Length: 290
Image (cartoon, rainbow, N blue to C red; front, side, top):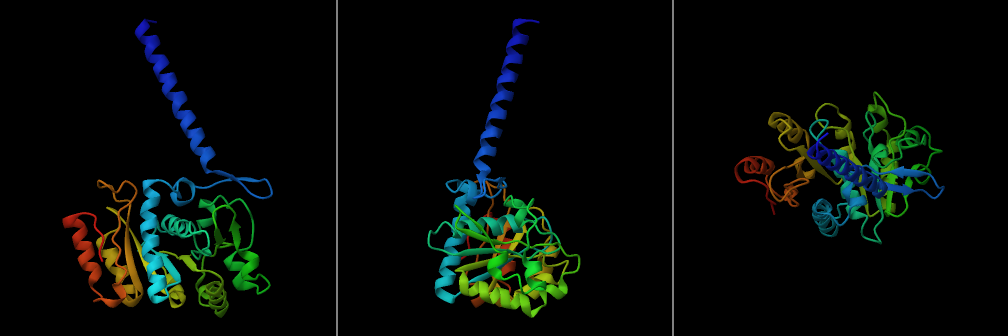
């Protein structure tokens, strides 16, 4: 083996060791301890929780600013987060917005996993391994009160209502008066209630939940969501309740985590405002609409 070979091998070993060290450090950053001593890891995508000082977390704080203003000006409190189809990042966005809102020390924030077909909120928060009652059980059995099924994430000022047992046909559950009562109680107890809903186009579930939401934020996958699917989704939503469109996964300069269009006065404008947004995205690049 030549000196050059030895040097190359040492460099590769050093690089590998450094990569392993960074991966281990990142894992420790995401690892937390519950009150009972059990360790859990939060998904690395949840930057509002594990990296609140990052550029990506700042983007979610921008959304927080708009939502807090809407809360003051129009009483918006229960917010549904949805997407035209699966895989657009709605759950990650909902959790990061909830985390940004929870950074206010006196705020009471609840995130509800109402995607009963494919729930992911508990998994992202490292709660997936725990078999515990959630929204499904609270709807089916009144003995499960809201306080009993909500999980508190100490250290993050965030409360979570997991989905509970996944359901293949959740229509009747989401159409129940019991769910209406649970969300009404949550409205009384929390400053913001964020509902992670199922995708809008494939299932009617999200439209059922919309009856009890003050507004919708629609998550669109950059370079992923077909325009026809987006048009279908927007036609299914009540224009008066559509408060913003988030463009998730934008890879243009100055938007390393995501870019977004957000119209906080959409309810007061012509219902076709989103068409101007979608066309502007292709011609002008990322921008904020006011």
